[in-house]
Length: 365
Image (tube, rainbow, N blue to C red; front, side, top):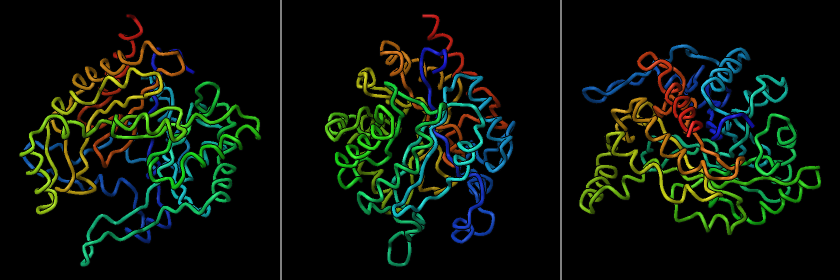
């Protein structure tokens, strides 16, 4: 663990390299940069397209890029990356190459953990029948596949860089309620972990509903990551406004444009103070590069507003035991969601500097 008072772990998207599947589905050479580069402003003052600065339009097959990312993250207070991990059942993986190369090479020497993005991949455009085309279906074949999944990740769990809580490697599940039998799955992995010389696994279930914390703990999760990105819809709108928004979504396929400061008031909550609840800090959100006018968009985010949000979140975790002062950062490099910390041409390093300043101010209290 690093010397910071708060453990900031950044979600990391490994989509920035060509794959045979993406070539087939979206065209030769497709990566996340394809969506980022073709984005256009949808209204006056809309910040698009977003152009990367220091790191450029990188390719994650290049080890120097991965090293430079880690050095930048560490410099500004990020403890490690939480790589999105895709296991679709029957041993089927996607986008595994960047992490596999990090694991095999030992570089960068920078902490990491994994979050299982257990969801099907779909083409979000509707077909004539009004349904989405499933590109890769998430399956749960049973115990043999779960054992194979564990054994595939065991070398990572045993790596000295792996992020731990209570000396147990951290493993997050993105869609915990999609697991057919979460308690049995968790129990199996805990057994396999102990049989392979580990103390166990520190399981984290992700949710956007703070009311689900106790339910997830009852399912066997050790902790919960709460993502309150859209809580303002639940708490800051009248019934009439909610009906109007739903109609816009269903009939006109339009998302909502919301001021960042208005949304950020609801990014934190009292549950964040609980030892086994890990909150999320969010620099911005703009899904329009992927979904056009259908995606929700936050506007007027600034490093100063983000810093205020960080300080409020840090204040909720600083009293916890040292290894559980965890805050997840959404995200390091989700460029097509307008949700990233890497430098762009407009803000440069300002968001990273805001994080570092918040870290320093928290440490001095």
